[in-house]
Every structure is written in C-alpha cells, then in structure tokens.
Image (tube, rainbow, N blue to C red; front, side, top):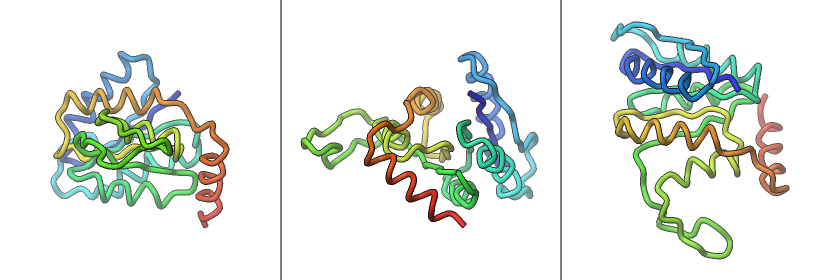
Length: 165
C-alpha cells in the first residue's frame, strides 16, 4: 500500500518524522509537500496534491497534517473517491459503540471505526491536539485496520460515493 503525505508549513517536521516511521514500517511513501517552512504557504495547495493521488487511487491511503486538521480534511473531502477522517487527541467514547451497548475504553476506537464503518482512505491529523507518540500509534492503528466487510457499512459507503459530483 502506498501512503501519500501532505501538510502546510506548520506540520513539516511532524510529516517528515511520520514519513520515516512509515518507511520503517514497510510502507511505500510519497511526500506531496510542503517541503519547507514558509508561513505564507496555503494548505489547500499541498493537501490537494495528496487528495488527488488518493482520488486517482482510492485503494491507497493519504495522511495529512494541519494545526487543527479541519481545513485540511475539508480540502481532501472535495475530491472524488476521498473519504477523509479527522483525528485529534484521544478521547474516550461516552456512548455505546455497538448495538449490544458495550462501551469501549479504547481512546483510539474512532480510528478503527473510520476504517471499518466508513472506509476512510485519508486521515487528517490536527497535530496541535495530539502528542507525537499518539500520532505514531494512531497512524499504525488506522493503516492496519481493514476495510469494511459488513453489508450495512458497504452500502453506506456506496451511498457516499453516489453523492460525489
């Protein structure tokens, strides 16, 4: 699996560290920028490069970084075939996470759900709200979580695809 990375100027250092981490984990990585700290850059210019790659190859993955990650996710989700989820610092679920009523105490459960329920192929990380060690854990969990298999989730992802213009 290939992983495309992108960030604005504020996330360059973290993106570079995640790049090295992913290569050590055996992933093929393509860095879509930015490559330098320029406070006048515009994140849509860089995020759109990674999102276009995932749009063209929806079975691949993209990981993007921003201070909040919000704008970056908005840019990515403008592209056909892209389903970008947003990750902040771990937060414990307060509501049941399945029909049986079990409450998960795993703060990274949301990452798994973005994959198994929504087939997210891009992940936006709001790095100002996540510790470095949690970023690596989050990336690993997200990349290792399989695609959805349940019919209801596949049906919903298909409906999302039909909404794209």
